Image (tube, rainbow, N blue to C red; front, side, top):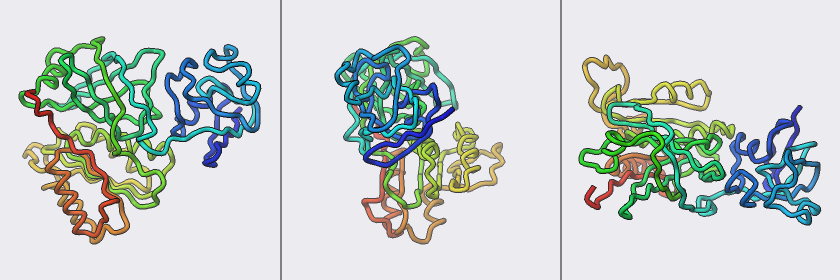
Length: 338
């Protein structure tokens, strides 16, 4: 059996299964409600039940009082629907509304995606979850006070782990550590989330994504979030790398194309003879520019090396894109001596 939950004041609605908690169902449908621990401890996810009935599996959670419960206040990370519900709850609409936090994380998996790319999976303590918007990034806090920034590559509805795509940088102390000595169960301190490279939820414009190398990571998170949320706007993804082996998750965007509104164009700048490549070649921003006579009605998201991002910025301006519709995540490398 399932029920319908309607949120006020947004009017967004979603289905919830009989034994599913409200917050989990909202996240599953791509909606960004405010939360903290997701374990009934912090109280950040409190909303008000305007219509309908809820219940708690293990009694009233500690973060909400009997008096609050009596007037309809509900802890959405623990509340289960007993009927259709109308709930007054705050939906996060901007990155500035997401709380930045410092916390420990444990390395649970190191997955080699390419010769020079590792997917790093981090898990927070069981009593913690980091709320983030698709496309944001975190800082890894090194012991000497330095920081290393990495974009989050997963979408918020899939937040059991924080997924980072780490490219090996020649002479890079931290990335060298990831590739050579880091092990599962290692502990890292992180802070985040940061950044405004996020899906423009209120827009109705077609979206063009231009990724260079591991700039695919945050764009992956944004597209997965958009698909989870049921966004039907056209989405065009251009992913530029050197050779075929550098398309380290190529099957994923290939699968996205099963959606009628998603198109994917991989572009190789230095294909190898052994690649037997029949697709597009050259620079990724040039391939994108060749396909659109005018960009006045689009919005463009660019992520990757600074040179590529700047080339995209200049190019789309020449095609008529207003600056306010250009969003970017430029992967600046640390210049603090490694």
